[in-house]
Amino acid sequence: QVQLVQAGGGLVQAGGSLRLSCAASKGTISLTAMGWFRQAPGKEREVVAAISGSGVSKYYTDSVKGRFTVSRDNAKNTVYLQMNNLEPEDTAVYYCAANRYGRYSTNWNEYANWGQGTQVTVSS
Image 1 (tube, helix red, strand yellow):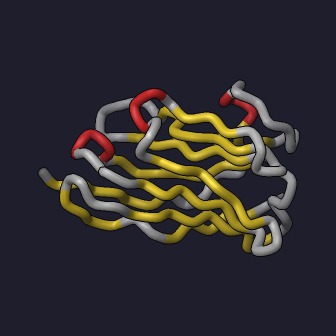
Image 2 (tube, one colour):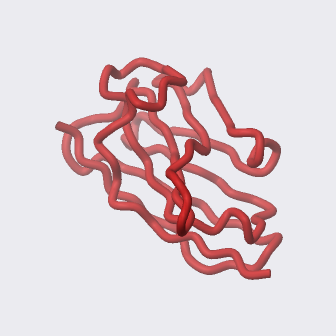
């Protein structure tokens, strides 16, 4: 079973940028569809972005379109989430997850093997 380790995150002012990474410390996520999710205090976890195993297909939730970019480097077994023009509403714990079937899907219930989560805090 793949194990995911996240890095990045932190505190930034509104309008700033952060980059999150998600690497497989055990197993491989190369060619496995990956998703980024977030959970703000008092709210349910929501999908932020997803990327197919090849990196060709991508999904973004409406609120981050044009500001966030999901990418991957399969040679490094790592997926990234570049977050620009951050807003206070982006404050949340961010998680990466792998599609349990490996396939690219917008059925978010298929994403499991969660990373440990990383806090992103955007101050106004």
